[in-house]
Image (cartoon, rainbow over all chains, first blue to last red; front, side):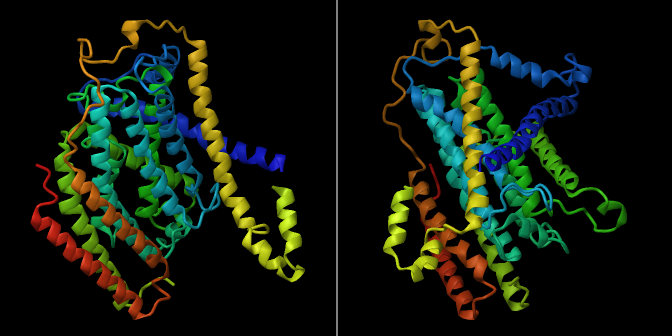
Amino acid sequence: MIILIICTVLKILAIVVPLLISVAYFTIAERKIMGIIQRRKGPNVIGFLGLLQPLADGLKLFVKETIFPSNSNLVIFLIAPMLTFILSLIGWAVLPLSKQIVLSDLNVGVLYLFATSSLSVYGIIMAGWSSNSKYPFLGALRSAAQMISYEVSIGFIIINVCICAGSFNLSSIVLAQQNVWFIVPLLPMFIIFCVSMLAETNRHPFDLPEAEAELVSGYNVEYSAMTFALFFLGEYANMLLMSAFVSILFLGGWLPFIDIFPFNVFPGSLWFSVKIALGVVFFIVTRATLPRYRYDQLMYIGWKTFLPLSLGYLLFSVGILISFNWLPT
Amino acid sequence: MTSSILLLKNYFHSNDLLFFNEYFHLNNSLFYSEYSVILIFLFVAVLLSVVIVALSYILAVQNPETEKLSTYECGFEPYEDARHTFDVKFYLVAILFIVFDIETMFLIPWTNVLGQLDIVGFWSMIDFMFELGIGYIYIYCVGALDIN
């Protein structure tokens, strides 16, 4: 029993440690690509081509002073960044990284991922309320407004994919795409999911809870040192998680582009990481190119465009599947 | 915990033992292999986040003072508590959100068994979505989704 637990902990660390390293290199990729888009160099001093920059940043945050504001609710103030970090980590427990590599092959994996990613709004709301300051409070309110505007359409999109795959298991969803990826029959759903994904991870153009031009830094104004770093890590790990989720739902997970000779010799996890990297580049390029939305505009998009469109497309695809008798059994 | 399970086992007849095991998932290796991993993952994640914050708090130099610990307010002293009454304009949308979220919750189990249902199972859910669609058109026309 003890040996089993130790083995499991080692397996978990084998996922978490590379995840944190890839979060570090996500940040430098973001700064480099944004530098290229804005015609400047980006960080290039520390290490070869600036590759040690994220480690230096992490070390700097580590040795800073942790500030607990005098009129904050200390317990909630401390729990909030930890909650964000924990929720962004435990989502990785069910992701199949390849056909054989999966930590826990849940039968309800999609629902588990949906639940953990929806819970992450609580970290922001707790941080905003417990800081007892005006900017974090406004950020928390905006985060709630944001959550209620995209969540319903994300639910419909996931239902759409599950009907086409006939399962909630992430591995079976990937295996159902062996003939054709779901991006082909469900292209509008893929686009809506990508936009909702930006709102879910509080990214530009929907970074309303931390709009630095209006709310200085939103919900994490009062945070410093490692409590701030946990928010930062959680947010970026969440982005990687959502990229992995979208590649499982629509881009065929670990499956190669075409299942013929030169492509299928590479291991599945390589294809999966290439697809996650595509998602990461999508996040960075949208950040560098689009201006910010107002939160009522985001609610209009969510309720007046995405909701009827995803509901209608659900009816359409179910109707097609029923009438041609294509339903997976 | 173990003794109470033993007591319960004695209480049941031996014929019912199979039922008992199924009921309490005692032999269910699926449960142990899949959800226990997630539990351990949760423990590791909690431990990691606590260790990160605690190590930084212990190792870094802490030098708090009154000005540093006061609430941030763009240069001047905070003049009011942040928790006074606030007009949340989107409360109506939030109420409608509950309705539509419950609709997705009803749809979720239906997706998995749709292949085994007959045509009535299909049309009854279509009817459900149709009626909610009428409700959606109503709230759209009444203007409940307009915030200002």
